[in-house]
Length: 415
Image 1 (cartoon, rainbow, N blue to C red):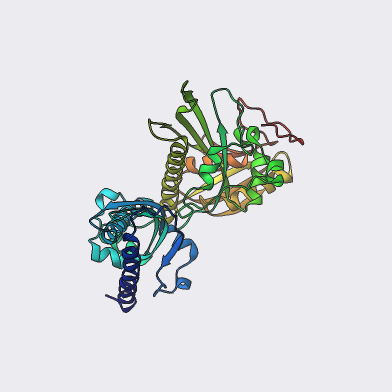
Image 2: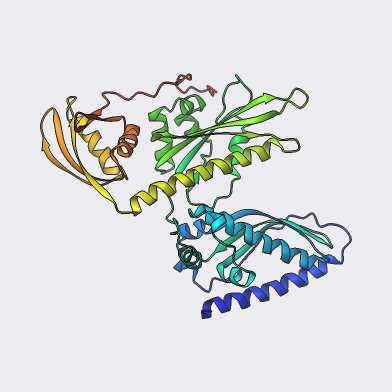
């Protein structure tokens, strides 16, 4: 065991003894402690925190892990609950990094202690014989990578570029959709989601600038100018339009029996996630929406696995593209901007430029269909004409067809 890891284990043993004394003192009380404690108990990183980038720590942190155990005394209950939580967090992390959790054995307790960089107790309730709470577990990146490598998997742990999330909520079938108006429990679920993860997500504040930039109708209609405005404001690469609709309202409670989800990337409209989350007996609307957020984030992370793996493989091909620019120089400048920012293009070069067309050589990751799909988000149509791939720029900006018509912003919310 490395010296730094030995120090970590010793420090965690010391912390465990401190917590045991606190638990023993608490165990002498008859009443259940209902106080929610917000205690950061991160180890004083023997591997210096500065040595691990913040974005990497976020990837290797699993937050809001429910812990619950009963035992003959409070100390044992707490230890068992946190040990179970570590195992649950490990399985979640392995899946996040792109490996099938059922093929990666959970380390034994001693090995797990060496993998865990820190534990944060977010909430806890204790009695003489039970411990319930929520915790966040941060793992050593190198240790987890090595474990996955030995099992034959490569960790996808490079964070994606950030997305801004627009949570559009329809409270009942046929009702007007909401984005900024209260109540919007769907936005609340996104606000309260665990912040750590492979895909950084930012939910707008909903202040005057946000309301001016975009509303529910324009978000649902995928209005490109409005989406571009809100994306730039939050310095995100793209927007995720996450729509949740309450279906089949229960007559007695007035609550929905299921929630239908539709999530679409603003710059890749072929990438759409559909799902339905039941509001089961005893499951609150809040819990159902939290589950919907979890499923949507998992879909985003799977998509990033695929995209990153394609790029990381280094496999490329060269395409000769013909670009129509009959609308003039403005057309060509828009195409250049799209080519420069497209992550499926490793490099490109201009071979010939005339007043009506350009010939371009592009080295791309993946296949031409993948590139065509990604360029469509910039209003470019890339189609195969004979044996030649041709790019046709849009002559004007137009939102895709939708049953919702974008409306101009006014002093009253149009939602």
